[in-house]
Length: 219
Length: 301
Image (tube, rainbow over all chains, first blue to last red; front, side, top):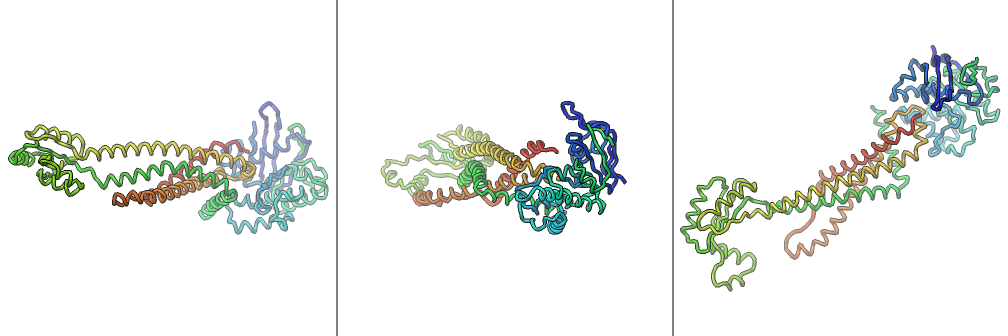
């Protein structure tokens, strides 16, 4: 089974900048894939295409059998619920507690609030933040904020985890801990796609590597 | 279904929490909307009261047919015969001149003045009730009676009631126009309030969209906010009118005592109050809807 299929994908931005050119790749269910390359190589664009944050200029992006290029606007929210998204800048909401941040995906899908609370605590426990559930995200360190972002990404038990530079601003110890988290999710069957230039992390987790250079897949 | 209800309940309680989290701002907002609504509603209350008064003196389709001063009893009988055979009448009543004088004496406290008169200045008269109450039918009858011999004058008695009625109709139009203008104001107020809210919650909207929130889910709390703001404004308007009437009725008390009649302005009826509240809520909701429609497109990750 494959989760994500890209064939002959091009992405051109207004102004003529070509972010991706002729990208073809398959990611199978339960795989762990690292997309590597320099800054500006097109890693983030690739992830954005998968989550329907961007649409391809040409070619097709198929996720769970759905063609993103042909997806109607109303279908996008439901497609995105297949994903857990981990952002480099965390995108946490600072007007609410750690716990409420993790509850957000469950609220969105209309999950029963009491049952959801249990899941949210389990997710916080998984990333080691349960003791901070009442704290506000602004009081957390960078590494803790990243872990909170991961907890929010996994709380609704997505089939696919997309993470953009999850260890970008962290020192090696923290990065290793977060890498282990991703490995744990992968071991229970979650497809994990990471965009990173952290080769230390790659050496530790031994994932399939897809290298992008200048918008093209080179290996 | 249960989840859907729970989601709505959560949007509703979230909205209330947001309203109470900035109580002063919310209060001012509600006061502005309340004032805008209190104007047309207050006029409406006044009109309804005036209309009630006018109904007490209901405009009967009546004509007074006055005979000439020197008409004899025979002339009156001849007119009576004519009235009996006249089509389009519901009835008539003869008022002899002596009886009319007696009535005047007893009623208006004019006994002294009348006693000073050398003779009775009043003519014999018939009070005729027409079957139809429209102005054209009454005018035809008036012209007909005026042409009869020994008839000096014919009055259509319900003229003043008609004038009041058409004045009230004019007033109703004025209230409607005022209501339309201030309804627009209410929509504009909620539109801008929601626009500001969307601006302050742009992060939340963006994140929610990224993790799979539907447009409906994002829109819902804003729509609730608009509706609740409108309803609260409507309630504020109701309260303002209630207080105004309390003050006004107290001032009216001495006047009413002077005339010996019960003069009290009533508030909106229960059904009118409910309609006003629903109308205000709908307008608030509509303003929010317009705003959300206009401003949510800006965030489309």
